[in-house]
Structures are given as structure tokens and as C-alpha cells.
Image 1 (tube, rainbow, N blue to C red):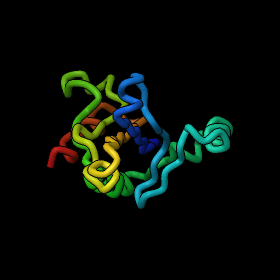
Image 2 (tube, rainbow, N blue to C red; image 1 turned 60 degrees about the vertical axis):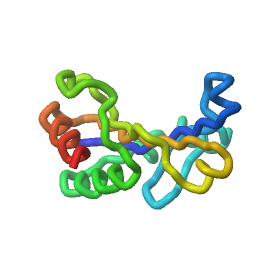
Image 3 (cartoon, one colour; image 1 turned 180 degrees about the horizontal axis):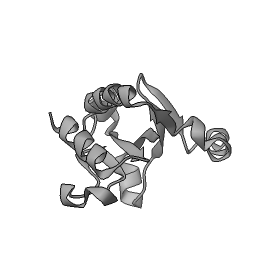
Length: 130
């Protein structure tokens, strides 16, 4: 069974100067964010990790890839030659939204995959490139 999770990370000028994110956590397409900076959310994620890393049926993979493309996720966490070792695909450019222009927030997204074969990861990689 393939398990997929979307995550996000936000960097501001201040957090970058400190070498850290200003916020990070799990993301559900549609705009729901579960910040690890919130102690209640962080505890819930620790106590119920399966609520945030959900199983997907093969037919749902297409929807996940569409959601990933909408978030700008295109590249892999490594080279395609080492696809067996890749566990996530990430956005290269920050989301250019209002917070980006007005507050200088750089928001990036990642799609984490677990429990799939190298051929499925290659397929995901190819579909994200389209």
C-alpha cells in the first residue's frame, strides 16, 4: 500500500538568518495546514501519525499528482538515477502568493511517498515533469 503525505515549510528573512524555518508541518490540498510549531498539533501528529500520512489506492495517485503539480512540486529529492532512494519530491520555487510579496515568506511543498516500488516512483517523477 502506498502512503503519501504532503508537507510544507516556510522561511522568512528572519528565520533564514537563524538557519531555520519559521513554520513547517503537514499540508492537505485545499489549504489545510497542520503546523509542527503548534504544540497541540505536534502532539497529535506524534500520537496519530497515520492521520497525516494516509494510504492511497492506485486510482488516488493521479489526484495526488495533480495536487502536487498545483503546488509546484516537480523535482525529486535526489537524482532519477537513484530513484530507489528517493522518498520525496519537492517544489523548487516558492509559492508566489500574497505572503511572498508582502511579508517575504517563502513557502515550499513536498510530496512524500512510502511503500511503492522504484518503477512507481519513476512514474510519479515522469508525471510530475509534465
